[in-house]
Length: 513
Image (cartoon, helix red, strand yellow):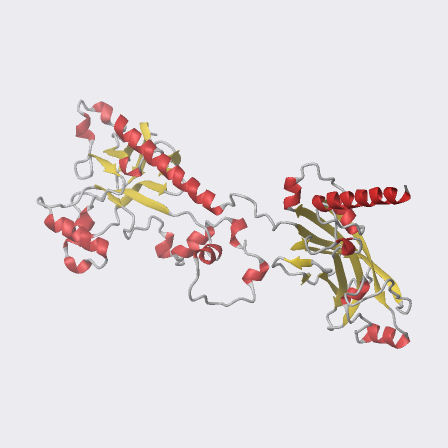
């Protein structure tokens, strides 16, 4: 049994565009399929039905508007034109010297009211924004931090570019062009409707990625097929863009070079050309605190949270970042409560304000934490306190901090179990050395405590000082000696003390002799 040819399989092709998209040229040719009885006739044209489209070819440029029979009649009447583009089509048809009755092979460009998918008209309507949101990359949909998504004003009267960029999905902006053909018989009024038109080719251009998608792909050797009303057709899609001249290629290379230089200058403007150095004789500490997990607190059914506070001794100050914070409330799983809470802390030590007498007793900042629980009955309990001296050297450190909590009598234990509420410190610095303490010794024998669980901490420490840049041979353990009570202002102070000691030794020898 003889069957008409089904043509080549329609597969899309994607290309990288290295030239201006305005130079794109596509030739579409459509021919009525050869009759199965064509071999019985001497002339092939005798087998074609003259009542249908026999053959037509057109060379389309990018976003070139070619009117079909229906559009030529529709836009010629001014009352049908509402938008600016439609009014432009009306002026073009009226001002043309020759009457434009429309071509059987025509196009729809960006902005035309053409919908290739019938589901948009017959099915549930979906806005263009909802379709664009589907193309948004999943990792970028909720990329904002928790604090930026909640407890904020719902309406921002004057949003800046950064806020607009963070609160909108990213999607690819494309320009589309459709090439269609009118397959209606000649004895029917094709200018009355568009029911007999068939989509031959869809061309999409992504300007951000410089990519061109042709669906179906170019086919210069093998043809595609399309079925009309009572007739089948073969059509070809060919790429016929002219090759650019040498002068034009040079102009494009210069334009691309200028664009690359502009993008490079914009990126360089967003980067720091040099690191911001602290003031002279100032030691700066950058700390990245990670509160990982907690265990052995005995409150698996209640949610735990950890509060931290950085206690600064004299001559220390913070550079804008908060010194206190609190993790989220998390419940235990398999006996372990996971937090994964990160915080950044920046501290400065004024070395110039420390004299020789204070250098031997200067102290180092401490990290104080408290672990508390809050269950579904809103019963609040302190589960543990802990303190830790911050690292005195740069590097990555991991700690397993043991905690303790105050213990009261039997009444306090019953209150803690049934209604919540327990003994807690009025001043959290008391779990280390209180800030108001003065004297050579600190007595805590009256404080009754019981051991509690453990907290996993990780601290990354970076130290920055201009002294490090000047003294290449600075001893790495010099910062460690600061914590041990041997703070010296600088290398110049060391040399000065050495000279003073030498002079005293010379004077002592002179007196003895």
